[in-house]
Image (tube, rainbow, N blue to C red):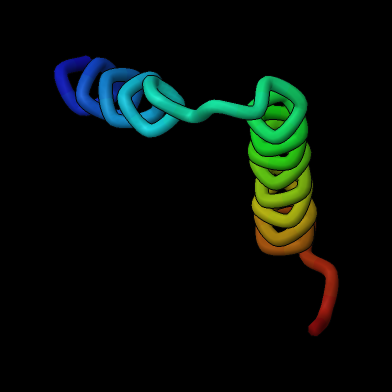
Length: 55
């Protein structure tokens, strides 16, 4: 749990002093998109591992 709080702190600190607001919004949307894509890749990998698909 402490690791997640540390990542949250680092994430919020990264956008603290960014001046153009639209850049901050775009970066936050991109980081959310990246997390979703990585999660889908992990899901697909573990689904193949546990369901017996051949690679």
